[in-house]
Structure formats: C-alpha cells, structure tokens
Length: 84
Image (cartoon, rainbow, N blue to C red; front, side):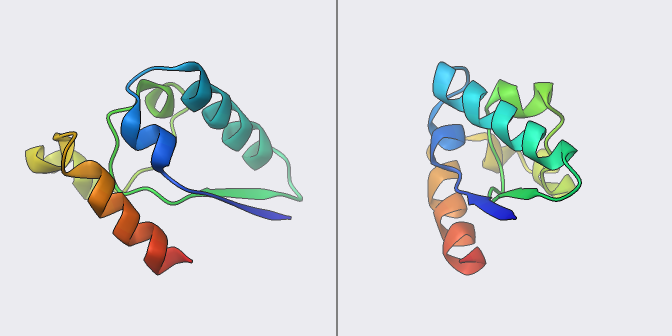
C-alpha cells in the first residue's frame, strides 16, 4: 500500500500533537515492508520530522530562505501539486 501525506501540518507547526501523530504514522508505516508512506514536503521547521529522521531534500538546509515560515507553505504547496 502507498500512502501520500501532504505538508500542511508540518508547515504550520514547529511542535504539536497533530504533527507528532503524523510523523509517528509515517515512520511506522515505512518500517513495514509491504507499505510506503510518502510525505510531500520540500522544507519544514517541524521538530518531529527531525526526531523521526524524515528525509528532506539535502539542499534545503543550505538555503536560509527556506527556513522562513512565510516562504515554506507556498513552496510545499507547489511540490504537493507536482507530486499529485
């Protein structure tokens, strides 16, 4: 089974119950051999992604502009549209 998650909660929250829940779900699903959870995200300030070592594009950490909260959601929206 393949499951697609969008970025919305990870773009809005640095910490939080909803983003923690989704990070746990994605991590748990990807640990199963028959399932794959895909998170459509370019950059995020969310700490739960770091805790679960979610893969983000390597170059995003090198661009300080992508850490700005106002820039992240529109870029992630564009990536989600492209992924869909």
